Image 1 (tube, rainbow, N blue to C red):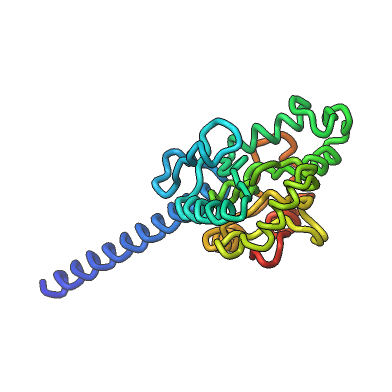
Image 2: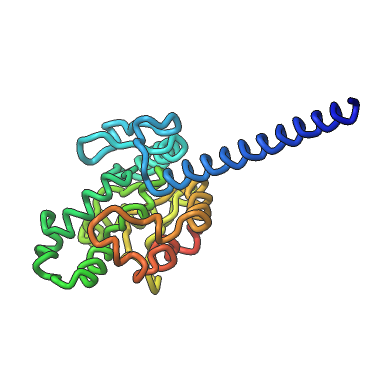
Amino acid sequence: MKKRSVLFVMIIVCLFFLNFKLIQAQQAKENTDQEKAYLLGKFDPSKKINFIKISSKYKVNGGNLYLRKEAYNAFSDMRKSALKDKITLNIVSATRNFDTQKTIWNNKWTGVTIVAGKNLKKSYPDELERFKKILEYSAVPGTSRHHFGTDIDINSVDPSYFNTTKGKKVYNWLNKNASKFGFCQPYNSGRKTGYNEEKWHFTYLPISKDLTSEYQKLITDKDISGFFGDKYVPQMNLINNYVLAINPACL
């Protein structure tokens, strides 16, 4: 009788630990899935407690923009400092989730959005070439740093703006001072692969550095889909040639 009781207890204990391990594994999978969804931009920033709506006084255009709270506070401090030097910094674009990036991408793909005076669907009937052309300045949905909630476009996304006297002053100030507030320009000049230089794009490094590392660990080509031309993702080696092809100082 005692042997049966001991055996019963052992079975119960084993079942308990087995169930505990299964719960742990399920929780780990759920955490990973949530992290991947975040990195891919599959969330609503307005519903994230660690995001904040950007004040209208900081924006170039209308519409609701959101940032991670830490990045927002750092930008506010940087803007105040710039104003002392008679430099005005405003935000053109901040967090863009997957759906927003998908709209940008698909509109360029179909010719709804004209790029540099061209309807890309007509100018680049070869889809792979069109894919590459859009990649010059626009990220594939699921690969944009704007998904992180740490990246901002400052004052203008038109390269010609930064060739003007005003634009040069803004960029020179950012180049000299942005790092003091935790910001880094990911798409600088001199890189062999990746997006063209973007003098307007800055990332809040204290958070984005870890998110970039997590992206490299968790995301694969199979996760990057759901938009026009997604069949070309494996050919482009997007993670290495674009997501990670940034200013080494931002890694």
